Image (cartoon, rainbow, N blue to C red):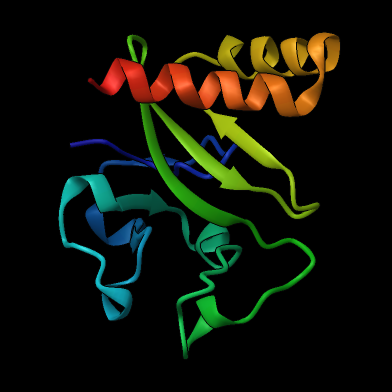
Length: 130
């Protein structure tokens, strides 16, 4: 099985399960489930960039200038999309399989107004989950 780091923009991939870190989007200590919808894989470098507001101890309880906050998976006809808050505090969407998704979202946000378009995207994603 091939494992990919799912940190936005990272191209690390391995067939060795010991070379990739499994992370729970909602920490187990905060009631997060141990299922595939609450898991994400990171390389050793990027696993340290994750900040979890619910974490009370360990590396994910410390926020740095490079930290991102995972919000969860969204689903579209093209596959799963990671929703996260970047180091500037902006909501971002990352789709490993379809990089165009990010540029389309950004263009729409820039052309039509940020808040309106983000709400429209979230509504579309909720409807497609049905």
